[in-house]
Length: 355
Image (tube, rainbow, N blue to C red; front, side, top):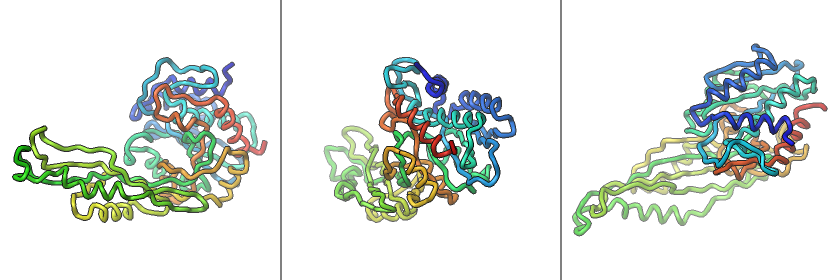
């Protein structure tokens, strides 16, 4: 039997909301929240919403944040329940989190007594490039979001409390040569071959372990894309690698750039085109400790990047915690576990409410 929370998740999954196409789901959620809370509590900015329910004065302020958009994945059927799984685009990442947020807002209207003053942020374009993510705009347009004690990003974590996040840097590393016929390579300079020393250094670099607040993060640098060559009988004059550096909390993108430049050692030109900051874990924060003690399945470092880093840039402590099945993010026939969804709802209720 489908319960109300599951029905909400199926309803959200049925509304297409690929990155850059979040208008329909935003319209749907906005209409429901205006009916529930009143227009004054629901502010719209593009295809994003900032929702501030009425609560008693003097409570510690927190933010619950979730993104509307999903990545394009293939599905063999419509959103549905099969056994203990709920299938649908974004079922794990992260419409399960959005469903929990919507039901917490309903709880407030039903008279549940909050221990915090929550603001709910539903935003667009999280899955795209860092600079197109609208959460940054919302933090600028709504200054109150930068004056809260804790933000919780409901990214899929299988109800694991994930602290901090890695920073991420993407760079195009270009090796330059000179063309010639491949029958007479000595007349040219092979750009692909020139990359060999750097690739050897890259392959030899071991992950670097960094421990912060008892959390272990592993810094890694990887070549993830390669492009070059003019023809199969032409010595190439240009070879480009996409290099992704995942750096630990406490380091800046500029420090990561300096380390990459040292590794390249002047063998190539470097164009850094995507910089995402890291975020500290804040494990000893009292509101984080309160969440940890309520029965989360475990506490782990976040080895990937999430929007907790955006909150970090404005001085707000933030954590990753959501009911979605983490392993299913961006997968074909994406699903989330029904039991985990129910447990996540229960955990958030225990954290947010007095009863």
